[in-house]
Image 1: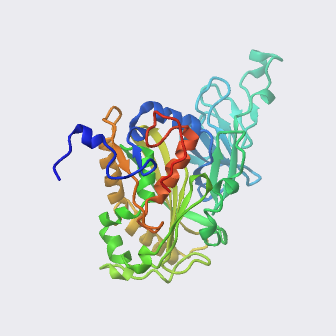
Image 2: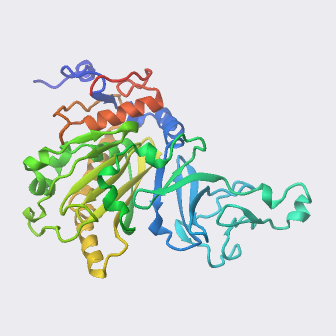
Image 3: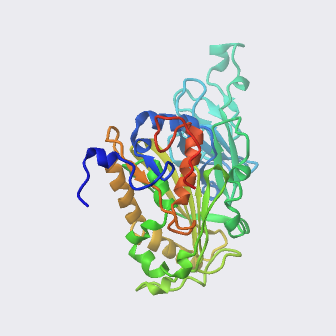
Length: 414
C-alpha cells in the first residue's frame, strides 16, 4: 500500500465509525483547553494530595486546580480543610511554599496562622481572619475581620486517605457517589489500615494531559514495555477486563504478575495490602485523568495538572502502609521504584511515548485522527476505556470528540 496523500490521510480509515477515533484538535486547540478548565476541572472532584503529607496540626500543602491556587491545611481538630490560597485583601498568594507547617512563626507573621506577607493579614486553620494590621485605623467600623475570611472549598478525605477538592460549591455529589463504585475493587486494600506516602516526584511534560490519561487507560502499548511482556503476557493477562463505570471512570481487572520471570527480579508475594492477593494488579482510571495503580506491594497515584494544551504536570506518589516496619518500607520502596520510579522499568518509557505524541500535536498542528478502535470483547487490549472516557468528555464539553467543532452526540462505538 503506497503512502497516502493529504486527502487520503484525512479520510476515515477502514470502516471505523465515530467514537472509534478522536480528532487531534482536542489535544492541541487552545480554546478547547480553556473550555476544559472551565467546564471540567472547575466542576469535578480532584485529588490534590494524601492526608499523610499533612500529619500534624498546622501542616499544609499547596496545589492548584484550573489555575486557581489551593491550600490544604490540617486544623487543631485534626480536620483537613481546603481554601483558595488567596488573601481577600489585595488578591496576594498567601503561601508560596509547596508544603510545611504554620506551627512556628514566619518572618511575616505569628505562629499558628497563615499570614499574607504583603500586608500582614492573618488567618487561622479554619480560614477565619484573625488579624488585620491597623484594622481600626484604616477601616474604622466599615470592615472587620469577621467579614474577610478565606474562600472555603469543598474538601473530602476518602479512598485510602486521599484529599479531594472541588472548586464548585454546587457540586451535586460527594466523592464516593462521583466515583460510582470504581474503587470497590481495591477498597478493602486501601481502607483497612492508614496509608502513607513514601515516594514523590513530579514531571512537567510537553504533552496534553489527556494523552497521559490515554497511555494509562490502554494496555496495548505494553509492547513498548519489555518488562511487562516478560512478566505478564500469558493467558491470565489477556483475560483481564476493562470495566466502565458512570462518570467516565474505568478499572482494569487483576491478574497474577510473574515478577520472577524477569532477570534480576523476584516474586513479591511476601508483601501486599490488607485482603489483597499477592502479586495482583488493579488499575483505576479516574475521570478526568487521574490514575490509581495497585500493583502487589505498592500503590501508585498519578495526579495531573494541565498547564496548557501542550503541557502537563504529573505528580507521582508511591504509598504503603503506615504500620510498615523499616524493612517492609524498604521493600515497598524498592518494588515501587524498580517499576515506577524515575529510573524504573516502565514509567520513563510511558513518558517518552506521550512526549512523542505531544511533539506532533502542538497548537496549530494539522488535525488528524487518533484511533481508539480496537475491539477485543472488552479484554485488556480493547480500547473501550478510552472510548468510555471520551464519551464522558464529550458530554461535559458538549463537543463531539470525533469532530470537536460539532455538538456532542452519543457515540455508537461501544
